[in-house]
Length: 83
Image 1: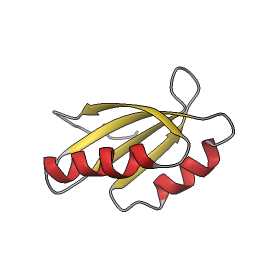
Image 2: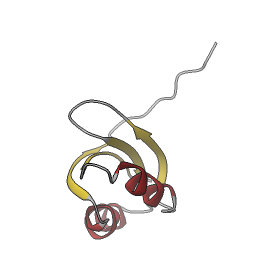
Image 3: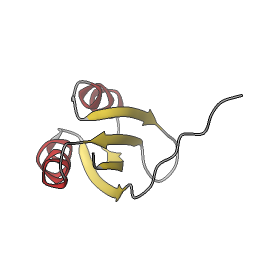
């Protein structure tokens, strides 16, 4: 299944609202509020690249308060064991 990390800039004061909207989206697997150039980083997963693109361009970028996104499609993923 295609996955992408999406870095998001939001309007000042809209961080919590955008964060919650992302949490409510079934394609969004994880959401992180961060400090730095971007305000939110999210992990997005979809059954196909077309659906991944549609989620990002048709849903995430259209959320009220989202100013800009940067998408990084994941090529390889390995989760390190804790401990």
